[in-house]
Length: 323
Image 1 (cartoon, rainbow, N blue to C red):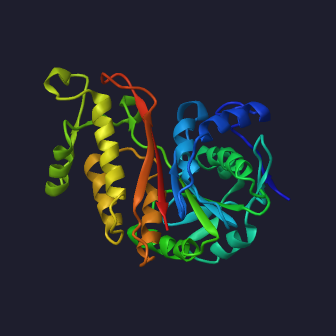
Image 2 (image 1 turned 120 degrees about the horizontal axis):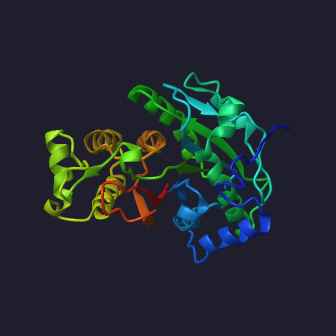
């Protein structure tokens, strides 16, 4: 049995099982399961930063009758195009215990040309998938669900053409229509600041709407920008940008949502690192004709409240979709 080691334990989160379990339980406290919420969007920073927001996403996840959980995450270290990579490990390690990979489904996926096996080193380097494992383990344990019965399918996504996104979505939609499958989409929201090469700014929602209508980019702040001339603090502008994206995903009509999503990202430049996995799940939802594909948002936070161009922050959102 090949086991993916918990490579980020001890740095991004505690490697001490009892300490980690206690921390995650606090994040999952007072959570309320939402019937048929089989898709969630969850952040993937260190638990100290985003754990409370993660907990609000996982708290909604309906795991009744679930046999497999697809985890879709972006690639932070390696660029690849027009394919999705599927983990080839048999298990993943967490300080709390191991989670089994659904190797049969993994084998089925790579029979499709748009799916390929993931390199083991690439798998171990990536945190967007790993950061979901311990939170999922603790959620299963608190729900008294047999860990061995709920297997995972970790999938990494980088850059795809529209055609490939829809091909991936079509394949995954067959599992999404099955009530024994759930999906975790791993994504932080806006990475703002010069160190992220993004300083987008809007004064109100109408500026985004006008930019979308005219297909023009929004303003970017520089060191010379006079903030006194701007209507709201930078952190509030970041929130406007993020919540516009969240509202777009909250629309009940999924069949053109992918195109709207791509246009929003192009016009605003918002650095939502899981934009590609989100795009793929939107494509999957478009194939489920009886599903409205509407996301709801029980949580949103920022790592800090930016007040000048020299500062930076990362945003975190918790979302769910009932299917």
